[in-house]
Amino acid sequence: MSDDLDVLWVSSSPALQRFDKPLLQYLSQYMNVAQWEYRHGKDEAASIDEAVDLLAEFLSDFSYPLHLAGHGAGGAIALTFARRYPENVRSLTLLAVSSQPANTWHVHYYLQRQVFTMSREQVLATSVRHLFGEQPHNTTKKLMAVLDRDLDQSPLAHSLFKLTELPQGGVSLPMMVCGSKNDPIVNLPTLEGWLKVLKPEDYLWECPKGYHFFHYFYPQQVGGQMLSFWQPYHLNSIVNPQLISRNIV
Image 1 (cartoon, helix red, strand yellow):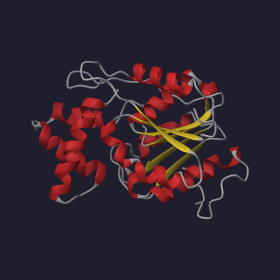
Image 2: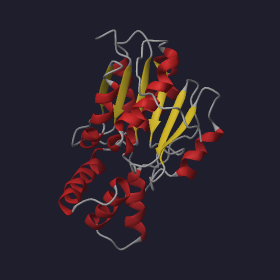
Image 3: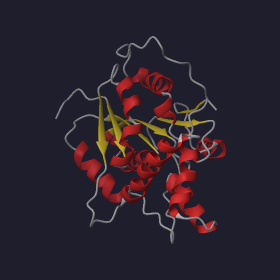
C-alpha cells in the first residue's frame, strides 16, 4: 500500500462514480487522491454498517490518517466512519450531505412515490431535473438509467415501505460541508442544520449553482475550496494559484 496518499474519496455506488471524476482529476494535480467504492453482491443486502466495515478494512493498511471526502451517500459513509474511527481520519469533507445524513436523493424519490400516483420512470425523470437541471431528452433517459442503478446499489436501506435515518451531529476532527445554492435535495435549511455542530475550525460553503451534483459541473471551484480547507495541514505543499476565498454561511 502506498505511503504517500493524502485524500480518499468515498463513493457509494459504481453508478454515480462518473460524476466524481472531474473533481478528482482536478484535485489530483495538487494532492495524492484515491477513490474507494462501495460494492455489494446481488444476493447481499446493502448496509451502511457493512460499507463502514469494508472501508475500515481498507484503511487498516495505512499507518497515518487520511483526508476523507464524499458526496451524498458516499459522504454519509465517510461521516459514519469518521465518527467510529476518528484516529484514522485527518479531516472530513462532505458534499451534498444533509444534517440528517440519510436524507439523500433516494429519500426524495421514495417520498414522491408514496405521495403521488407516479410510476418509477416518471419519478426518475423528475429526479433528473432536480439533481441535474433541465437536460435534453436523450441525456435525461441516460441519467434516469444511472439513477435507477444507484437505487439498487446504495448502502442506505431506503424503500417504499421504510425510510431509514442516521445519527445526527458532527465529528471530533476538522470538517468541511459543501452544498449548492440551487440544490433542491440538500437545500440551505438542510445545510444550516450543520451550524449547530460546527467547531471553530469547520467550514460550511455553498457553490453558487450546479444543483445536487455541483462538483461535477464546477470541479475547479469546488476543488479550490477543498484545497484551501486542507492547506493548513500541509503547510506549503499545496501550490494552487487558483484557490478561491472561503464563503462561510
